Every structure is written in structure tokens, then in C-alpha cells.
Figure 1: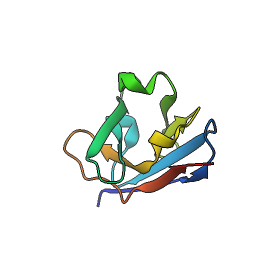
Figure 2: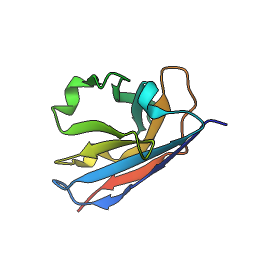
Figure 3: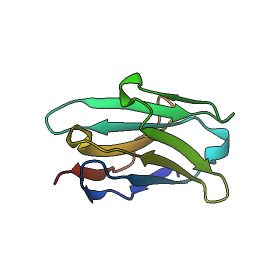
Figure 4: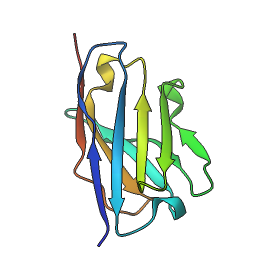
Length: 113
């Protein structure tokens, strides 16, 4: 059974950093494209970026290099490192296997002073 569990969210001040985790089970992240999304209050779910099974990464250009996606194959986990966080980054963050996979339950990130 495929399952994704996001964690690592919380409250952070503007300019701070957080690293989110997406622990996978039922498949190997090493052989999958893994994607990150977020959904701000009252808005749709936005694509942020992905990492391929070949370690290629792509990001939403408006993130301006603040976010980095990585993977630990031994832990079967994908990460989203977020730096220089802004209040507009406040959202629920989700990971997903490929374009058609299910989302995890999400983890809340709140950027506020």
C-alpha cells in the first residue's frame, strides 16, 4: 500500500528556515519522481518542484532559489528545505509521487512574527 507522510511543519519567523520530510512506504522514492505542492488558505494547490529518479530537480521560478528538494534513499524519504521564509509561504505542504499519485495528509507551515 502506497503511503506518504509529511512532517516538519510548524511556526517560524520571517527569514527563518524549515526542512519538511515526506516519508514514503509501499514504493521506493529512489525510482520515482517526487513532487512538492502547497495550498495556502483559500487558494488552490500549487506545484513547487520535483526531483526525478535521476536526481534532476526543477522548481517554480517564483521561489527564487529559496527551496531545495533532496532525497535519502536509505530512509525512503524526500525533503523540502525552505530558507528565507516569508509570510506568503504560509500554507499546508504536500508531497506526491509523480503527476498522478495520491497526496499525503500535509504539514502546516506558518510564517509569522
